[in-house]
Length: 143
Image 1 (cartoon, rainbow, N blue to C red):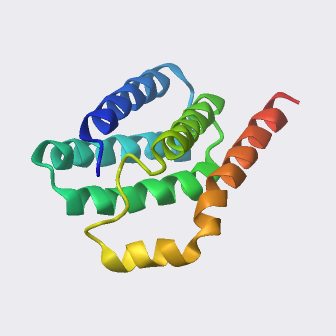
Image 2: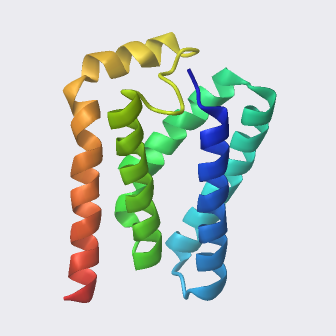
């Protein structure tokens, strides 16, 4: 089951923070485009949430996962890294409390659901690995 309201509120909070970072920080080109792309994806997510278009939410869930697990590694701005860390920690809390992701489990994309089931432990361990890498990037920035 998808938690439409929770996703909406979290996305609005993320967008407000990213809007603030975009307008107050000196971002490099990658970080600027990353913020713009995330905001654009969130616009599509708002439409899918409003229409309760679960297939669209599942596709955006895959894009979200790619952004968190791959594209976040190239971000250099500490504030944006902290946003990623906050998103990962929130996601892990939902996984622990509800025993599932608030965006659902790819119910409309059966083949991808099967792929994540087969990946099993990697899919569970990956957020912790990325979280550690992002924290290490922040550590390196200040030392």
